[in-house]
Length: 346
Length: 286
Image (cartoon, rainbow over all chains, first blue to last red; front, top):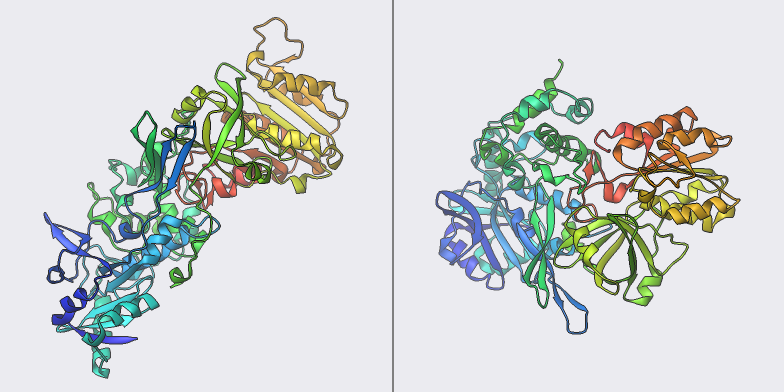
């Protein structure tokens, strides 16, 4: 279902979404992030890349699994703390982030489906905004099977036509959201569709960074386990973990108990984001660590994204948002590392 | 799109089931035996597992950690664990008395391929304190003795006091239907009547081995594998019939958290039992 929405009517649409908790990118202290929207006039949809990706809405940095409380009869009461069903809508989602959510969808499915993730995911409508101009100088979505107007994982894709948005509903959830706007949405004219397509094609050309010819990288990586490349490339790493914490596709987590009172024992089990870039990520309680050096951890990160994930899910675990490049304090550049893998020995 | 069709009817995989410690006593200075029963009796009896699988045990307020089940599914109802005091969760477990409440979820992992092992000869090689998972498969073989060929056990410990379940192994020596050879690196008691030396010194005692019809199961500290595998390869046991259970840091146990990922596999889903063939292909496995 394709529609047209005048930009001036956008706040009116938001006003009709009373049943939803609305998130959109907001700039605070020079940093953009997806934040709850305070009022319908405060949403600015532009080509920006938030620091923290939209994955935080469906897979928050910290969330509680259950609460435990000691009871008088020498027992323990355990209460699951599943997320509420309240619908959420996120505006301004970048197409690379929508695609990333399809990857976390895979991880959190399967025999042991993650109810916390899926409860949030099912309640969330992702309204993507096609990139007219690359929101980051390090965007490289077109090199990893993505595009500035990719529809994967999104419920609606908006394309900025200047005065209007070209709105494509991609799922039932998306149709429902457009339906909430009722008459604000008009049927597009053929020239609107043409204009949207033209903008989308132009946008692809504007993605400056490229990671070309990587089809053989998964195979190449297999033979590079012992390569000195990993030492060389990880030399400057300060082990901060930003590359993985702020990656829209990274999904590793930790689980811990937080105690509120000891008598009676009361507390919660919390899940928090974790990263394979920390040495204790793989440290056994015996002290043995199968991945002790930072070189082995950089190797793990690159291998996971460009080999292991491909073997399991037939997809790179990278959607080309460029955050790990832009935000790395020492300038480790995943494009350059993968290019070196590609060209290694040739 | 497929998100809209996800059902939430399935069980929450992160919620532990309440269980009670039925019995606990020390096996060595830092290893304790725990016999555990799920509080819900129906669930306790229906808890189905394969030898070699593991469970996540919670001490609420401290955390959760994975432990191999060392009892056998052929004796349902109670679950047994041999736990070495090593970290925060095990530290908290060691303080718990009988009848204390813990949390348990599982079973997880692949376990030993007991169906493929039927009618085959079994050589079990144990080293040091890390012997819990092989106790499960050994008891399973003994409970179903007619389904397996020859069963041999080789167990090496540092000192007699560090031989876990040594009474069980001494009584196995009395049985006529299996070979059981025990050794210690050094005897500090002066009363040890068995072999002295590392576990590989027991290999010459194995009676005629038919390698293609043999499965060998190995469990011990990482340093032991290299030497034991060398002996097994000398006997011409096929690489995919040498099985070992490996340790890995884990958090979720259900293939999501990423901690136990090696190569494209997750130890919690695809392990913890691996063949020597796997180990040759996955470099960070041990």
